[in-house]
Length: 166
Image 1 (cartoon, rainbow, N blue to C red):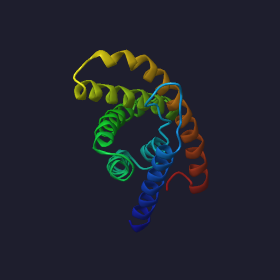
Image 2: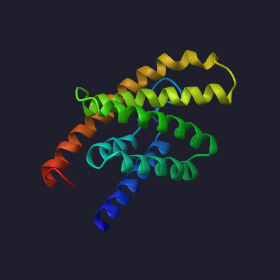
Image 3: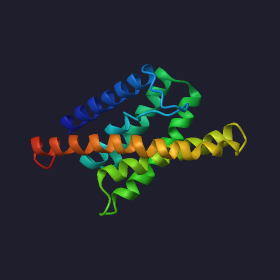
C-alpha cells in the first residue's frame, strides 16, 4: 500500500517536472500552442502499468497543480478539457485489443487537441478557429507517436525489471 502510494507520488512529481520543462523550453513547431505533451508519457504508462483510476488521478492532479504553478486559470481550463477528453478516448481505445500503446497515445494526443479547440471555440465565442484543427490533428499524430513510442520502450523495460507487476 505505502509502496504504491510512494511510487504514484514520484510519478506525479515526474509528470509535473515534465510539465515544467515544457513550460520553460520554447518548442516551436511552426504553429502556436503545439506542445510535445511530455507529461502524457506518465499518464499512458500509468494506464498500462496500474490502471485507469491511478492514471486519471495523477492526470487531474498534474493538470491542476501544474496550472497553478506554471500557468493560469485559462491554462487549467484548456488542459482539463483536453486532458479529460484525451483520457476518456485513451481508456476506450486501450480496451480494444488490436490497438497498441502507441495507437492509444496517438488517439489521446489528437483528442486532447480537439478538446482544447472545442473549449477555445466556447471561450472566444466563434467557430472560426476550427480552421486550426487540421494543424493540431497533424501535430497530435506526430507528438502522440513520439510519446507512445517512448512509453512502449519504457513499459517493456519496467515489465522486464519488475516481472509483470509493479
